[in-house]
Image (cartoon, rainbow, N blue to C red; front, side, top):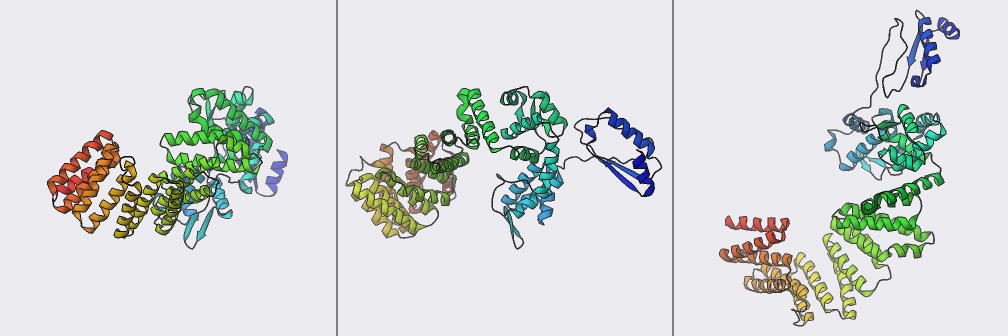
Length: 537
């Protein structure tokens, strides 16, 4: 105290006392004494503390005091700060979606700390994740492997370095869980009572209870989680993830399919790629069966990455035992097409065709590639793929495949406005079938429908109706409900332009009945739209 007073009497003094929440009783007593001693001196004390709950501060003894309470800024304020730093005009919902997503993710990682947010933003600019072209910003990557900048590493590391080893170990396990966790889970993974350590970490402002009972916790700020995780040794990190994967497998039993993706993630980080591939594939199948196309694509891509890593490490046999690469690629292409990611599906289709495939798989891959190229408007590339399939079909002697390929080529010519060529290809498909339409109803109906549409566009109503009726009969015999709805709508449209409105309404109402029976909302909407249009004529 005497040294501080002597310094204050020589020149104005600012004394900073940090982390007061750590102060013990003797330290607090000394601060109380200091506050009394500096009264009337040219001294200013700055006391900094992190309090997760109210604590008793030393009395100020009549000194003039100013309390500044720093709380995390709200998500809206964090987004506004992100936008102002980039010079983005207007509200956040007017920004490009990629920028909005990046801003939200950085704000989440910063946990309401404006300094953290600013430094993280500086990092994504310096590492090329966020680039500027003139007055436009472009997001060119993800934050999955974002390293903390040195400015944050220093401040966060200083906070973590003060922890006792047992608490740091516990924090590392919590970081590997990558999300909210409960005390019971952490106790099992830590192989010892985790509650005292978790309470200590909460008191240090690193963890926060998220339930009234105080049994579930999360990191106060994402940067603390990142720092704790990055501070783990590679072998230690792998060991923790292996334990987490084993715990999930043993805990959820019949619900394992639902958690297979999480298990795959932990096994990948544990570098157990063989098991990771099997669980990632199960997760992809589970997502696909549940209609979660985006998650299915993500999991199939994870499978592809793990398969490549396993193969590169000399584990090709183990990789193929989990799932063969052609099967994986074909599944990924199908999921990407369902999601509308046609360009990615084309890339993976070409990768599939580079594999050693049996003729049936190659034929299916060429047909799908042709369809994908057509969806992208690449008609020449689509026809090239289909011609290759047609040549292969000729070698295999597959009547059904050849007919379907010819009709698919005809559909492309139809889209290009080449109506005569579309009709020629449709008739070629029927010739390939050689009158065996009852044996091959689906490709035969496809060909008749193609020809019917081409004649419709030519204004040849009679021949259009004839082919659409033949397609309808074949689809009725095959009990192809969705094909029937298409044929009924096609016939109805043709009768409308032919001026036979009563017949058109009859066909539309027949299609309406099928749509309701099949519970098909898109088809139902189309039929109702056709009926509404008819009422306006």
